[in-house]
Image (cartoon, rainbow, N blue to C red; front, side):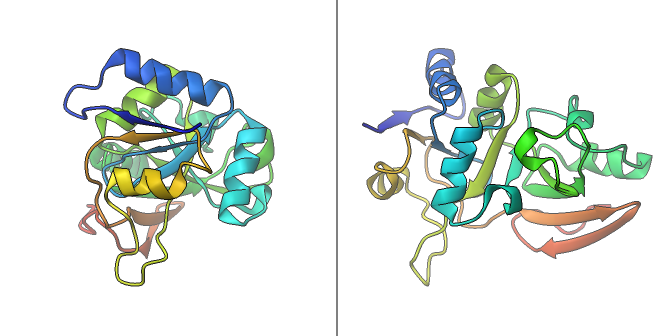
Length: 206
């Protein structure tokens, strides 16, 4: 049975965060708040969980474009090849924030992502998401949850999200109403920066 767990973003309860981490470590899927839309995520090191997320999204795992939700930039080199200093400064200036940076993937990527040339890195400005990743000890793989509603592309009410998703995931975290604007996606190639999708993040990066 799936669980709807209330966590207050202004003061995330450590016991509640630990409960989420236990679900993730057992290969569970969670829906959780970010600084943009609610996301569907799992432990990056759990292949079975990754395959469940890919199946829900209707994609092959090795071809998926999931983001890696990180706590900070300290372990970036585990997932990304060396980046130019101006780009690192750009990341430092804008993260945590509503951006996904597509960066060149390292050859140390977890097994299912070994062949990927690029990887999306996200550090959301949301205390719940950051505390979960910090307590887990490694990133979670994430993808946004779309709505079939043609007017509202993203559901913002966690209780409605729970109603719709409780049969597919193990836990939905109620961190209050979400946003209905996704992150701004920025692709980095050397020192060149390309806006792939305009979202909540300001384009005035520099």
